[in-house]
Image: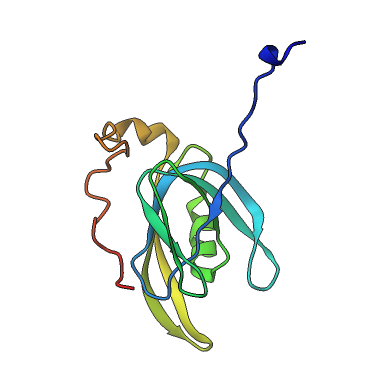
Length: 154
């Protein structure tokens, strides 16, 4: 066999989503992989893990407050360790190929501080053909689902 016969596989290098302390972030994209117990929550218990190919730009904010921007077509990992997100993803019964819209929309006071609240929308794989064609910028456009200026100030 010669080197020309080998197909080189580029392994995707996903980045982890981390949520800011203030509401506003969204993750919108296609679910490439879903592992119901592939992540680990804050008590070292299994939780859902999503691999998402982004359809829209987003950002992550680490515990030090540093922001990292992601572009459409970037691949990210969403470790669903937060209680409301974990519960929502389990209830949504997502599958590979579905489009997902996760919106960190609110904080709620609880005994141990503030709990992040998420809204989750799913476009099942069989309905994805209803999505508009890609825009000139390359990202698919989803009619009426994505506010463009919801980034909290930093």
